[in-house]
Every structure is written in structure tokens, then in C-alpha cells.
Amino acid sequence: MFLIPHHTYQLSTALSPRAAAARLRGQVGSPYRGQQRSEKPFFGTVTFPSFQISRSISGRNSFLPVLRGTIAKSEQGAVLTVHADFSRYTQIFFWIWMAGAAGIGVLPGVVSLFTEHNPAALLMGFAFAAAGWLVSKLLFSREDARARHMLIDLLRD
Image 1 (cartoon, rainbow, N blue to C red):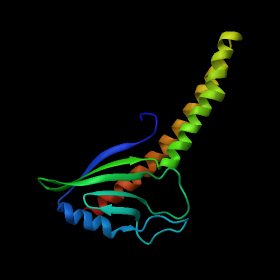
Image 2: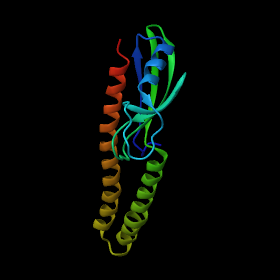
Image 3: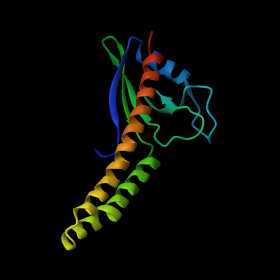
């Protein structure tokens, strides 16, 4: 969905697909339980040729991307196709926020525009929705860049 921040990219490595999966698997701890950080930089699962991982951090961060991807053979070695998205819970919260922005801000603003000829109310509703989108986009992009750079470093020869 175009409103929810996401990112798709490919990473190339000189490693073979199985070697890339093995290296990734070696840096992925067991699935996240509670707020305790894993000793490994990622948590999740790697089942060749696919994976689903997130960065391992202390505490919670709703803007951490979930990295879902595949590992395939390329001419130079392997290529990882990565789809970074919010977790399902964060996506649900995001849609509740946007529905609230529409229901609480935009719709009354439209009514006010036609009944009281007050465009400021409509602009406030759009500003509420835009602020939610902008904050989520900025924080997601920052966390996605961190995870991407960690993967790049991990896959170097």
C-alpha cells in the first residue's frame, strides 16, 4: 500500500546463495521474546532461500522494519531481494491513525467548509493525517537504513 512506508531493494554479494544464507543465519538469533536484546544483531528466521528478520535492539521500537526476502543465484554470486515493511501490528495502528485522522479531522473539516465556509478546519484534519504519515516515514526510513547497512556489512567478503 502506497501510504504505509516500505522499501524494496536488492543487495549483491560475491558469496554463493547458500553461503550468504549461512552467513545471515549465523547472525540471526531466535525470534524476539519480550524486551531483551539478542546477542546477535538480528532476530527472526532464515530458511533458504527466504528469510524474515528484524534488527535486535533493547526495548521496543514500533518503527523497526521487518525484512522479508529471498536469496537467489546471480552471475557474481548471490542477490538478496529485500522487502522492508512495518510489522503487522504497526500497520494496523497506522490504519487506525489514518482512519481517525479522516473521521476526526478531515470529515468534520469538509462539513465545516460547506456549512461555515471555514477552510482552516479542513486543513487541520489534513495536517493531522500528514503529521502521522511524516513521522512514521521518517522514523521507518532511519531504521531501514540502519538495517540495510548492517546487511551490507554482513555480506561483504
